Length: 126
Image (cartoon, rainbow, N blue to C red; front, side, top):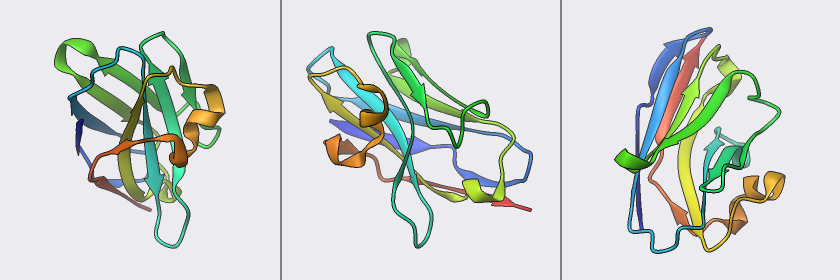
């Protein structure tokens, strides 16, 4: 399984970015995919997840500003980020596990994820 993120960059507070994660190699239709982020000196934080059964969840810290989605035809996971704040500055990672649907907030815990991308940096300037 390979996950390759792109779309990070530097944006002013209040701006928008869209992250992409191209995925390949899954052998199981039941797959949970998620976005995580890690700021310097902080623990990795789950941002949002979704699965092929239609379950979607966003962390409270990004609810109403970020939207996770996927395009099955393009094998791509997205994270649309609007109204960005300086505290959103972090390295953003795409992650996945196979064999099970997402399970709400439990699927925002990084220990459950087997596959990870290399990360893409998002910097929000105030």
